Amino acid sequence: MNKFQILKLLAVITHANIHIKGGNYFQDEIFKVILESKKHLKVIQEYKVPLRKPTKKRKHHKVDILIVDQTSVTAINSKGKSFNSTESEDAKLDEYLWYKKALEAEFPGKTVTYIILKDEYSSTNTSLGAYHYFNKNGIPVYNTEEFLLRYGIDFISLENRRQRRCVIECERVLADNNVNLNNLYEAFS
Image (cartoon, rainbow, N blue to C red; front, side):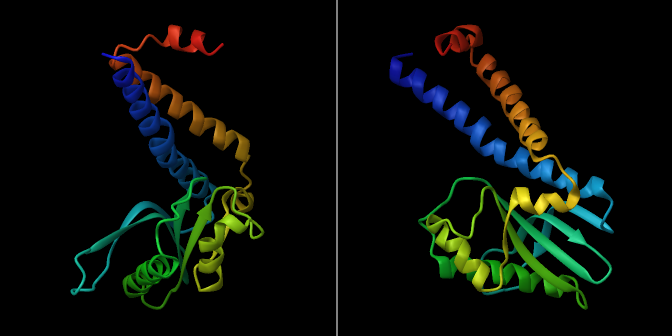
């Protein structure tokens, strides 16, 4: 392999296993915290809700974490630190409201809330305008760390577990691709 191919392989493996899977691990850790709190009747990860709109191609939406209680349902969309600024705020809001409506049809008689947990969210951060827009238009946005305080979680421990899972998986994939991890780590020390 030439230098470009080596660096490209390294970029692909680390991006997939640190950023992408890291977001999935983070969601899983949040799910476990909420589930293990025993504060809710049901807590479901990756709940598949039918969208019931025959004019649209998309037939289902997976809710990252769904909390079902006696009179209410809370759907959680977990977002990491990154932000996709290419999507229209209005289009994304319409999408979230569509998901909420589908959940209302799925759980008639229950109050449905569709929320976003955003890592490091701050209402004063001007670069998060889309999230402020969602907040003002019926889709509440919460700082993940602050939201999880209601479950008595040590957020640093949660983040450390996520990072450990990322490193283990990334090291496994790198080793499968014959990357000498000792040499790699020594190069950065």
